[in-house]
Amino acid sequence: MKIANQNNRAVLISGDQALDIEQASSGRFPADIAALFHVWQEFSEWAQSASFASAGDLRQDQFGAPSPTPLQGFGIGVNYAKHVAEAGWPVPEYPLVFPKFPTSVTGPGTTIALSGPRVDWEVEAVIVIGREAHKVSADDAWDYVAGVTIGQDFSDRDVQQRPESHPQFGLGKSFPGYSAIGPVLVTPDEFDDRNNIALGSLLNGKEVQNSSTSDLIFPVGQLIEYISGIVTLTPGDLIFTGTPSGVGTAWNPPRFLREGDVIESWITGIGQMSHTFAGPEPAHA
Ligand code: ZN
Image (tube, rainbow, N blue to C red; front, side):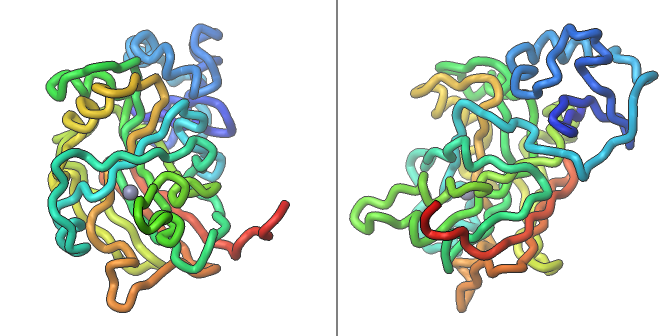
């Protein structure tokens, strides 16, 4: 099953058709996709046999973030074996988890203001939680996942490294638009192997990242076990699962995003999204 947030209404997708979930269910399920995650089990059952008789055209140009207002967003650092190698880091003993503050969420086709001269791209598979989860085991973890979407964990490398003695990643990865997700949410059963999902990104049409979630040091099950062992995950929450090699900071010389650059991101079985970069916002509102 694929769903999207089209013109601020939850839609079920089949081919190039979009079915308005609130209308097709005669109001049983909400138009607000964020509210839909709170009734995900019941919705999933209803969706199995939903009629597309009243479906309209799919309009990807009207898509917003598939979970636009998560209560919590998490990012995982140093989680791809090759990315860890390119940066010269040791393999971590525990997942490196940082907040992606929810106000940084944007949809799949937006223009984003650069926050400084050292902003980087990070394509990621993003998990959207479909059921409250606390102390869930890795074996059961996928049962708590609504679906997978494409993410970009845009990162201001200067801010991410502050303060030098005790770097905290959260703020540097939470400027407006730096948690980009979309275009659709795909349920785990749609993937041939949900632990081997191909993903990549292109800078101005040239490939810069190309990998698979099979290279994750801590796969999705282990991430959910670890995070839910500490906090309670809630429906609609996002987990950015980490980025593969090919980020700009690891280039020689480094290459950071500039005004006018376009980053395209793709995941096999989900689709692709595109973001354009604008110059910085004024220092003060
Ligand atoms: Zn990341």
